[in-house]
Structure formats: C-alpha cells, structure tokens
Length: 302
Image (tube, rainbow, N blue to C red):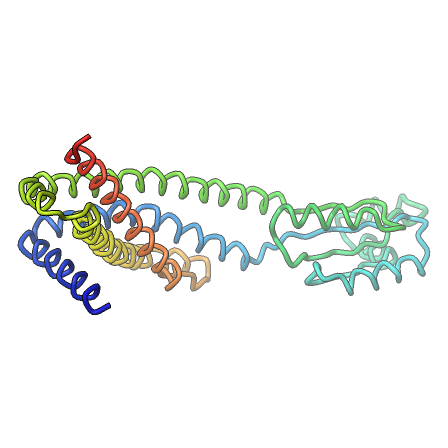
C-alpha cells in the first residue's frame, strides 16, 4: 500500500512540475476550457432562473368550471366538496348563478342585455388555480374535471403558460446540444494537448518501454495531466459564470425595479458547480485517455 501511494505521489509531483514549467500554456488551456464550459452553464443558469420565475408570476393559469344549467344544489355542493379536497388545486372560488346574474344586471356594460332576458342564462361556476403550472398537468386536471357529473364545460386559461414552457423546453434542449458539441470540442482540445506532450517525450517513453515500463505506468502521468486541465478549466468556468451573472444582475435589477420586482439571477449553487467540475474532470480524463491509447498503439510493436 505504501509503495502504491509513493508511486502515485511521485507521478503527481512530476505532473505538477511540468505544469509549473509551462505556466502560460497551462493558463491558456484552462481559459479555453473555462470559456467553453461557461457558455452552456450561463444558458442553463438563465433558463433555470426564468423557470423559477415562471412559477412565481402573478398571472397564474386559471381553470373555469361551468356547471349545467339544470344542476341542482346538491350536485353543486358535491362538486364543491370534491374540488376543495383535490390535491392538485391551490385555490378555489365559487360564483353562484344568482350572484353572477345580479352582477350582470348591476353592470353598466351589460344591464341592457340583462333587461332583455326573461330568465337567468348563467350557470354556477368554479374558478380554480392549479398547483402545478406545467401544461401537461393543467391539461390532465382539465380532462379530469370535465368528467365530473353535472359539469357542462371546463375552460383552461393557460395559453401563456404553454408558450412559456415550450420556450423553456426548447432552451433546455439547446443547452444539451451546446453542451454536447462543446464537450466534444474539449475532448479534442485536451487530447491534442496531451498528444503534443507525448510527442515531446517520445524518446523518454521509448526508453521506458525498453526497460520494461508497462502501458499503465506510461499512461498515468498523462491521465493526471488531463484531469488537472479539466479541474483548472472548471474553476475558470465557475469564475467566468459568477462574474458574468454578477454583471448581468446590474441590468436585471434595474429592469426588475421598473416592474416593481426584486428579481435577480441566482448564482450557480453547489450542485451546478459540482456538476461543472465533474464534467470538466471527466472530459479531461477522457481526452487524455484517448490520446495516450492512440499514441501507445503506434509505439507498441505489432
């Protein structure tokens, strides 16, 4: 065990010494990786903030439930009891047909129409605010309410929510596509960097193989170097993301103030930061692994 620890410690010292000898090149690699990682990260943070804001907007989706004109009081009371106990409803307002008829008669805009009507044409109605604002959840609740006995028509006022969630879903897909493309680019960049390092140490590697060095022993320092490139790039990405979001918030706060809001973009939490770091380290290791294996395949005799 002690021998294994000493072996890996020596490799880490060797890798760190090489990185310190090439400070400028290392900083440039970290900057490139950081820039590539911060682009999808910023887009994700913005979409996540807009998604949270969408759940807090005052213009919440509303579902209107209109009863049949011949529905008796017992049926209406039963429907009201079911709606009050429903787990998917956050707020419920009942408007009886008598109160709606009176309001129609008292309104200056509709008093002439009401005067020409002999009977009350308005039904009892329930106005519901659902807990979940996702279009699929609203549609499911609407279809469920439509099947209740005594219900004539259910109208969901959620077009704005469907448009917003469609845009957010499109944004999430854009994040994944952009992340995939940039991830492939990072693997290529790190792989080429490691390949150049292997070329500069080709003679050293050939001598090591002649004296019995295994592929694992030769591969190890380059894998560690790729891991460090990914780790440094992730830290650079987090620095870029936090700095850019902070700059954005200077304008976002002014815009939100015009609408009487205190909304600002939230900085990445520890889960997002950990995800960025893990992805960068994994990409660094993968790029190094591919580059080293290809180089060793050329060096090994067939």
